[in-house]
Length: 301
Image 1 (cartoon, rainbow, N blue to C red):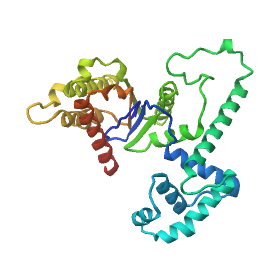
Image 2 (spheres, one colour):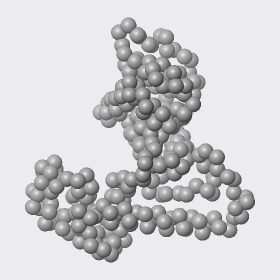
Image 3 (cartoon, rainbow, N blue to C red):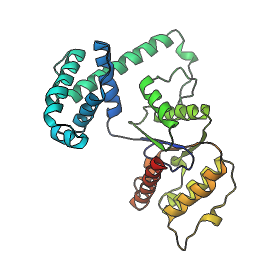
Image 4 (cartoon, helix red, strand yellow):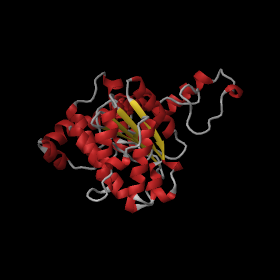
């Protein structure tokens, strides 16, 4: 599944979730920090971060002490501190050209990431400079797949492409407005289609408020719209048991026993503008709870 804000999907076939939401400020996600650290260390030493170094880096990124990391992974705190942590911060210090410690490494990696992105933008701009601006189509909404205005971020696209084909996976795309969330989503969808996945794209910005404020109506809307894009008949009345089952259970049954049972390939569900549901706690809490249960169930199916 792919979505803009937060979303997820339960598969009897493999399903993918991509979600993009609106934040007040941009954040450097852990996966980007990990990649940034690995890249600078590899460039400086010719070796990638080891698994234990990555473990210490992630634990530190999450604000955990060496004791907490040790308890979680079964190491001694002294070993993680002296043998792994100190050497890791020294590696990053040499690679980044500045003193890096367990307390300061986040900001150092953020600066390295921004610098890398700046070089990418500059290179992309130089490659396109020869084409007159008057010939470039002005983007309205998401940027077309073949548009030269789209700036490739190889690490991000690659992560999405790799994840979307994993059974039961969930992707969350998170960035401020006008940062290309939907454009990225469309590229991940296109990649999924190239891997013989069935895709469904739904834009929640067009949903009536009367539907968004009623959980049962909203989930029936979701089932109906997905079914229509899959070119399946509306069978909601046959599967929706209002006397015994709740709305979440009915939606799950409809996906599992009907929609997914009628297709013979993995399904990728993309939900755009999911943050439109956030103002309605009576709907969003149950909706996201259902999505989380689908995602967890998919991981063990």
